[in-house]
Amino acid sequence: MNLLDKIDKNSLPKHIAVIMDGNGRWAKEHGRPRVFGHKNGVKAVRETTEACAELGVEYLTLYAFSTENWNRPRMEVNALMTLLVETLRKEISTLNKNNIRLKAIGDLEKLPPKTYKALLEGIENTKNNTHMTLILALNYSSKWEILDAVKKIAKKVADDEITPDEIKEADFVSALSTAGIPDPELLIRTSGENRISNFLLWQIAYSELYFSPVFWPDFRKAQLYEAIIDFQQRERRFGKISEQIS
Ligand code: FPP
Image (cartoon, rainbow, N blue to C red; front, side, top):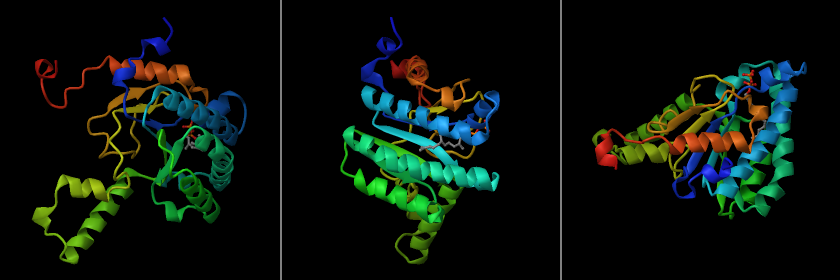
């Protein structure tokens, strides 16, 4: 039985989130500069997106650039921003062909103007697609997002739109940059690192975590299938006991 046949198509995660990690170490292993790893990471982005679309996963979120990544050497940051613009421009027609809608989360307005423009164009040009939503986390961090949500709600309180006692979980959820997007059931991190690194902290409260040893540029459909098969073997109890689930 091949890996794909082992996947139960009736209990797929609706939303998969991925911390794409290991580009730099992959490049080092190949004796090449870090940027070479990022360029090869785009192949894994393409494969993972295609695999999710083929399976019927409805949302795929990729952690492409964190608020902390600005601290990397300027040359690497510039190369990543250029790669993003190139990839966005090149892949929009493929997204449209496959009926995939592009979205982004993060402090987007602080991206370099060219990156921000290419991103907005990609979002606008794919906004009517309905098969799958690809969400890029760019200039994103969970602490930024949570603080931003708190500020939005504090403003409503200051404007007398709501009292502190009236604030409900749903109000907080709709102030997050993921408003309208269901929480991921499965979070994958590549490269053998077992960390969350400031990614979707609120949204992964009940997500299953899967750590793949593979560096991101080597991540292919087979590795995604393995993660989904592993996910499907787990019992998700949401605080209940086993007997209540079955
Ligand atoms: C992490 O590896 C990777 C990133 C911070 C960037 C990911 C970007 C891409 C794959 C390219 C473009 C993406 C899209 C969505 C078009 P790392 O550099 O932290 O690797 P290391 O931990 O081995 O140093």
